[in-house]
Length: 483
Image 1 (tube, rainbow, N blue to C red):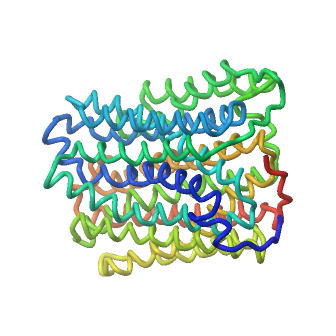
Image 2 (cartoon, rainbow, N blue to C red):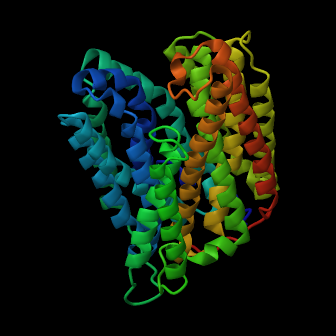
Image 3 (spheres, rainbow, N blue to C red):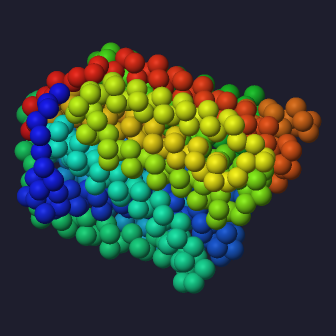
């Protein structure tokens, strides 16, 4: 890992590479705002289109499409270049936004959210890959602050915009607002980003069978984890069939990848020390994020008796702590190394999780927010260095693949978290009221509190495992030559 010094003028928005950075920030902003803006407008959407029982699919289908397309886009970016894949992602996201804005029914809106998710699956990994291409490790120490600021701002702007559009204009503008942002990002990227595509062979071959098997097998696996215990019981025929077929398809995927000349997800990724540590850390971070984003607002409302708005701001404390730490992490890992920085972060996550375990029905919502803020700080110090280390450990031809694999691991972690934490919460509820209760929002605080408290124990265990995963990360990573 390089220890070269850099200054803000060399990497800022006014520098020679500034327009490219701005384009990536605008593109990432599309995904970041979308992560929070829709949730506040769900009642308005349901009132207009109906389909109350279907609205959770607005989020599930988006996450499924995004998660499963990430590693595929990563490989395509290594074969065809970052620019065309990024433009494809922005184009799909804007197209999906337009279609969502004119949706005439809940099934149509769900289908159009799938298009948005396919766009988001390209934007996030390719945006970070572009950053890895044009900036050195030392420069990314400062650039991380710019990218982190996008998520920090979006965590507050998103819910506010969603509420304003839903209450005073129309929920459809939640999607239309993406159009100018997307067009601006694409225009700057087309005008200012020039790249030399480094190909290992004159005619790169697309791994069609691997792509199909990963897409279908991965989708079924995530679907089974997300909807098990919700749409169907874990021991039901649909659950068993979906998970069994996903395992068979993913096993076939491994066999295909062993012989493919250009595998969509090379198996050497699984034997790479840096990547194993970075990806296992990303998976555990995904688990922790779900534990917080799903159950902290529920605890604030159902146990502490706050409003939905106050509960949302309690969770926003995590999304505030994350970008603050991410913007500082670069300076830290340049001084003390990747493993030390990520260990610092994971230990902070453990401390935050311990604070979360001390929250009770007598606690204030500010104390709950403090625990979330501390965890957010820890995640910021853990996540960003992991991505940078992974990117720095490979050359140009593999950078898209490893970035995509890291983000896919986080998505799988989120799905696993949904399944495990949901099973834990429903198990506690069943022991108290005699049956699992899917509608946790309407349970009494006396039943809800112990159920969510056990979820917090699970989050604390994930935090401890994060420390273990980080231990295997080298402290210094030799940076491969940039293209």
